[in-house]
Image (cartoon, rainbow, N blue to C red; front, side, top):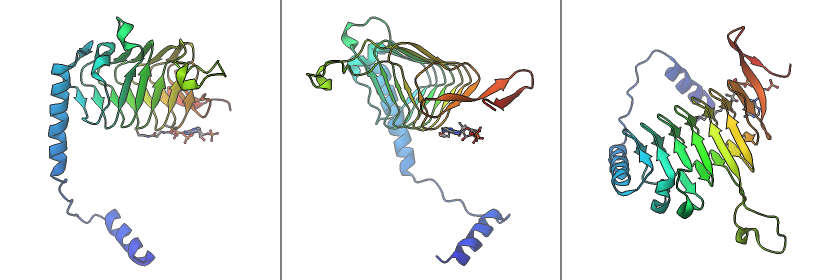
Length: 225
Ligand SMILES: CC(C)(COP(=O)(O)OP(=O)(O)OC[C@H]1O[C@@H](n2cnc3c(N)ncnc32)[C@H](O)[C@@H]1OP(=O)(O)O)[C@@H](O)C(=O)NCCC(=O)NCCS
């Protein structure tokens, strides 16, 4: 297509012309049915600590059945394509390690790996490809391969109510308690290694506060000016 044709097409789309929107591919209905069947199967056959009503779990998610006791899922939680939930040392624990609050949406290909506790409070939105981990691989012994050394004791991670983690964000907690406060925004590709106050926007690697909500002016203001 030449650039003049491309511009004409763009102008036509931008005008008030009514265009015929194509119907969705019928195969998407099949996918929706498979997601419903998969969710029903998991709720019936997996021993989750809890799995609330209205949950949707894509059939491509990786949630090993032997880890289900360590996973608590609230009501109306959405798990997109390819989400991986991993519970470390699942055989020896008596309380859930991964808690997904009511109405959370976990974007496709996100990974949540918990050894102690990763709690995602209600209403949190994770974009695609977000990583949340509360431990690391142990690497202190240089005479052995890292994969033989197991994992570090780690800490805990809490993502506060109604927050939003952008595409590719990583929240990594080597030790202690890392809390992202409520209604926070984590920018795309940010690497969060420390706690974040509520009502903040953080970005970069390591992530720093770039905006915060100012009660006095009732608006989000830039930080560091
Ligand atoms: C965090 C975000 C919401 C900020 O948007 P915004 O309020 O419009 O912010 P601005 O673009 O005005 O940027 C504000 C400052 O933050 C910086 N910033 C924005 N995004 C950043 C990022 N991902 N990493 C580092 N710094 C970032 C900007 O450079 C700017 O810095 P400056 O003040 O020195 O110029 C947005 O940049 C973002 O990352 N959105 C995530 C999109 C996404 O992942 N969507 C998936 C769909 S669920």
